[in-house]
Image (cartoon, rainbow, N blue to C red; front, side, top):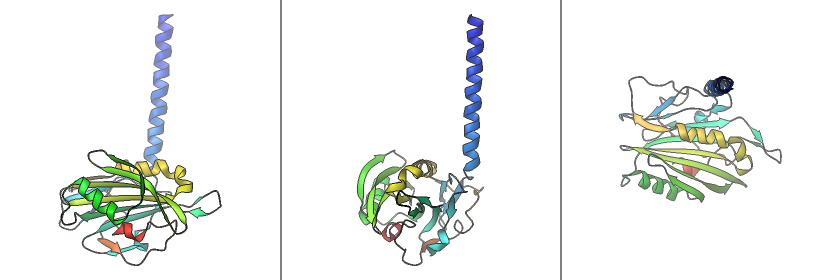
Amino acid sequence: MNIRLIVSNRILFATLLFIGSHVLLQSAGKASKEQALSLPNNQIQARFVNPDESIWKDATQEVYQPQPNLNAVMLKRLPIRDKDGVAVRPVVSILLMPLPEGVTSLKDFSDFKQNKNPMRIETSIDHGDKIIIQGTIEYGGAVHRIVRAFLVEGNVGLDLICDTYDSVYASVKDDFNFWIDSARLTPRSSRTPPALPSALSQHLAISAPLVVSAQAVPLSFLR
């Protein structure tokens, strides 16, 4: 009886281990390799992982052009139809910049950025290495759900903005969490992770006003 129970438990453990490994391999297969973003003459770089390169596409060149004090990546998701049949393209923007004058801490940076673009904040959590806020803002005739993370390392700040219509947030919530969990600031290494083709070696800023739609965060967020 005891021998059968031990064997049964071992089989169950092996099965769970196999399933867990299979799920992890599937997830790893969808996600891209870690990518990097940096500023000129600065040893701090941002690192992040695209949760699924087959649906999150680089759109940086549609929005930014080179500028020394800002490096940025923007990605758009393939369209999701909301309940009204509107094709919504959620957006993720990753902005790397020197800390503004007078900003010396993570809280300072978070407060500075939030004051520039206020929204209705529902949650704000300080994790020590990053501050994550979530809330809504209305523009372009729709309510947008914003999930935003702030990170600071040395004299560099990272502002990661996830934006979608509130009506389809449930469809991208896991991806938004993945983007935010993967984001970090580290000393630049000699081995640079693969770059997004249109963005990572450029120093970018806004080139033209954004069209206010489901496909872009508000212009003020990207300053």
